[in-house]
Amino acid sequence: MIKGIAASSGIAIAKAYKLVMPDLTVTKTTIEDVEKEIACYEEAMAKTAKDLEMIKEAASKNLSAEEAAVFDAHALVLSDPEMKSQVEDKIKNEKINAAAALDEVANTFIAMFESMDDDYFRERAADIKDVSRRLLAALLGKQLPNPALIDEEVVIIADDLTPSDTAQLNKNLVRGFATNIGGRTSHSAIMARSLEIPAVVACKTITSEVNDNDMIILDGSEGLVIINPNDDEIATYEKKRDDYVAYREELKKLKDEKTVTTDGHHVELVANIGSPKDIEGVLENGGEGVGLYRTEFLYMESAELPTEEEQFNAYKAVLEGINGPVVVRTLDIGGDKEIAAIDLPKEMNPFLGVRAIRLCFQREDIFRTQLRALLRASVYGDLRIMFPMIATLQEFRQAKALLLEEKEKLTNEGVAISPNIQVGIMIEIPAAAVLADQFAKEVDFFSIGTNDLIQYTFAADRMSSSISYLYQPFNPSILRLVKNVIDAAHKEGKWVGMCGEMAGEAMAAPLLLGLGLDEFSMSATSVLGQRKLIRSLSKVEMEKLANEALQKGTMEEVVELVKGATEL
Image (cartoon, rainbow, N blue to C red; front, side):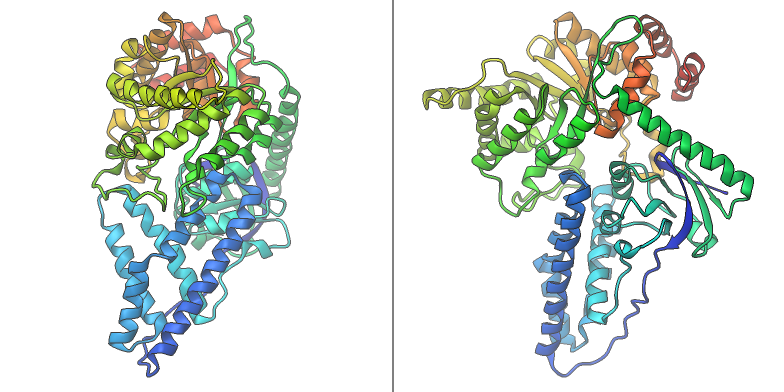
């Protein structure tokens, strides 16, 4: 029995399928025909580019634009002129074979990125590893494992699953996966939740303890893997699996129900999306609207900036497709997100540097184009515009002023614009949360982005596994900030939503309900579970619970309090 991190809920019982890499050992040889060797390298690049495109195409059928966008990052690594020129220079100057030249250059790049203090750049090392491995396999004539070829029900066992591996998983055959490394916010974990495939990560020794065709029980809710279970264990987990499937089916009955507490209090449950293609998932899972449309994925789809017309059509499609409010976050690039069309400055701490609204102020041309497209689309639905990473009142005023300037220009051009557009901000910087009473006088709404709010409050990068214990959504300090924001907004008659991962967590629902949150925005697949839970709670009782939680000293005390007061 191995304990890891629960990354994606559900129970899987099937044979183990180990994703074993082929031997990509490189032998350095001296070559005579330099041009021929360079041509071989370019041919391998072309094959790898084609493979990446095919994988992305396959992924786009099963995943959202946001999740499939990682392959754009891999394409950028592949086409990096610096890496290509260094490989070709080695072939020319040292007269060595292309595989050896690539191996040496890639290892240099990987070591350089892995040694950096910043987690974002360390994560880029994984992208370089993935792409260089594909290139090396092409050069050596080796075939990389292809999960798409699996033809029976399996639980995949691997050291890690790359985004390209995960994208090829057929969830009708791949019942789950377990890996040695990873975390809840790794690419593979996020994709597993989207595909609704159970997953346990950070199992440390799973690949050395499991053999192909071993029987595996994987509990993605508890973070547990049982190797070669006995008959009693199989029977126990078969029942758990059946219960979980029945639970998911039962939830579907709530698709068209309102989210109302036992004492008649209504809250909105809406979904986070990355593209118009995600609308279907929102509707299938009973989402009452969109609480976060991440528009940056429009910018990640090509090496060129999206035109005003392309953006207008995307926003129009979402507004027409959703019968409810649509909160659109303006461009949030920087931090852990880059796009080919915008050359971001290389910073020691990109999460604390030029990102989101700060970038928009530096590139007003890009920002104004987006604002025009949003304003034009506003007549097709209930549009709410949200500015990310706002730290000061002056930033909000500046952003809104630009919006009003573009609105005036369009009006003068005779373009129809909705008179009912709400304009708000994300609360993800502690400075804004503390000053919420002043912001509330000027904004139409707040949406709390807990992922960033938590990492900025604790000065702890949420992507860093070495300090993952500081990702504490239920710490009383976070709850007090959330309460301050909600109270300040309600005093001014404004509403408050939450679009961070916390909004979709069962443990958070009683607390957020008690604190007075008006709108919960989450992954579409989490909506029905939260609806069922909230419909079983009393608003008055949860207010008492939340007030008690605010007086606790640690997250552990808060979690115990919630468990004691509910059936969680």
